[in-house]
Length: 324
Image (cartoon, rainbow, N blue to C red; front, side, top):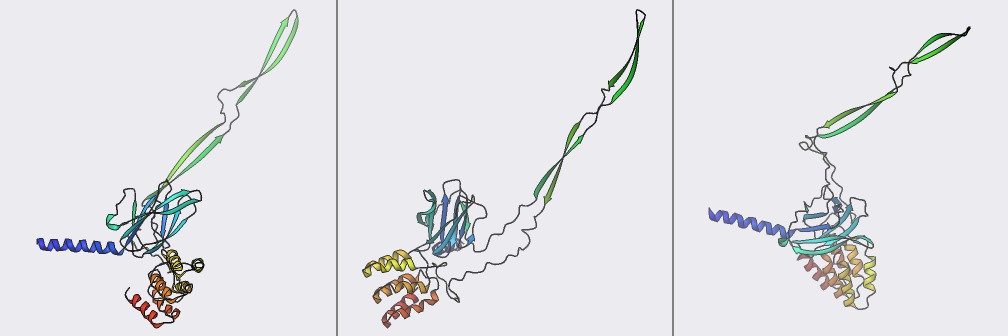
């Protein structure tokens, strides 16, 4: 029994370690109270805006991240690249004179990763989030009705005759007296408040299947249906090629090329475009090998053989590709 338990624990440990070696994590945080949504490869990851988000289970070394702030601050975009799997990279959002920027903060092995209680941990997903309404949501409507009544005072009229006899002279007076009734209705207003509460029960939403249209894949290389390397290639490498061509020596050209493409994703046609900036075939071969793991349409890599004159270089590249 002890042997079986020990074997199961060992197997579980090996499975966890193997998973850690094939995935990466990305952490994005902002120190200011400025919540945001993290959009990875075009898919929003967190349903509620947060200030510290950890996205786990990334299986590609390259990802495109867009930060969408809740308060409407302009979005931030960044392409990330891991040299190897089993890592956790952290990016910090800082406020600079030119606006908010997302900057690399550090990288650790997944085994050394530490969870933060204020951190929202999300497993990377490629399906859009489904917004589910709150169960038994109550909507209260308050209606006020004002009634105004106007009434004139009531008046009673009475004639009074008065006769006075002074020194043989008689004076007669007729006096009209208006008596105002004190019990009259003055103008007044009253307000009646009517409160209506409506309850919407959506408890059955989670128990039924919600049909959603699957997102259409983005085609970066028209007609290509083969193996995908890095997910989102660059739209252009004109600037990179120009920087390579500005260098005079082959060694400097190679340094520039590797620096410019280290954290980028490119297509086979873009690789061929950059290779044409080198004068010697040995340098073309060196860069072709370097660029393979940074290429989107891997099954098109055979096209690069057309850029070599010597069969030995074609064979060398072919062996390198097969070893990967």
